[in-house]
Amino acid sequence: MPISGTPSRAQLVDHLVRTRIAGDVATPRENNLSHYRLLANGDRNFWLGLELGERWADEQDVLAVMAERVGVNDDPEYRFGQDTIDPELTVDGLDRLAARLRKAAEGRERVLFATGHPGGLLDVHRATAAALRTAGCEIVVIPDGLQTDEGYVMQFADVAVLEHGATLWHTHSGEPMRAILTGLEQAGRPLPDLVVADHGWAGYAAQHGLDSLGYADCNDPALFLAESEGTLQVAVPLDDHVVSPRHYDPMTAYLLAAAGLTEV
Image 1 (cartoon, helix red, strand yellow):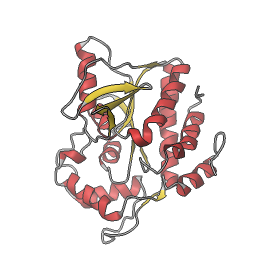
Image 2 (cartoon, helix red, strand yellow; image 1 turned 180 degrees about the vertical axis):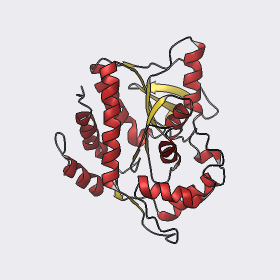
Image 3 (cartoon, helix red, strand yellow; image 1 turned 60 degrees about the horizontal axis):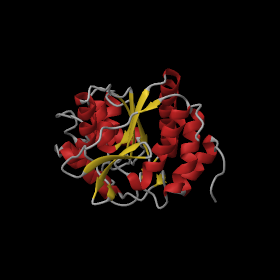
């Protein structure tokens, strides 16, 4: 049954496990390890807009960070089957994200929202943007006419997304964020004080030196590596596309309450 109102931490942990946002998630172990290996081998599709150099060339180092920050199985010999996200680490990440959102609200900062996973996280970002606007923040409006090789960079419900063939597009690329920041600079407009995003949108912003917060799945290690190095401020571990986007609503309510914000 859905949770009404704002859940307690214990209620949220239970909800995350029941809906498989955390706990035993849908992403299999072999997919996780494959992505860790590809990142370590220098495949930029898995760097999510970051510049990792050769610092993470050992996939066992990547696995160690993911075990610590996400809660995946830390045994390198465990190669097939179920993998996990620790729901306590998810809520810890939400608490860190909430603290930075509170700071943004207090300072009435300029905040940019973006998602490469619109099928799952668009409404999480939309609700957060609405709450920050109510608190007096400026939600950055992106320039018109932006595009990348994948499609057009658009904005819906205050959230930047990639549009391709009249469809909102799933992307790991940092190029859409590059297009936004370049467009803002060319227009003589200030860059955001804070970026709240996921995938390459969050990674590229962090690499560009902006305060950046991101959500990431257990098969997308780059943002957690960046958080461990201090490039990205917060990476929240979760399954970023569960069977219903409504499953994220209690998580969003918890986040906004922890940040001292009220959604409209």
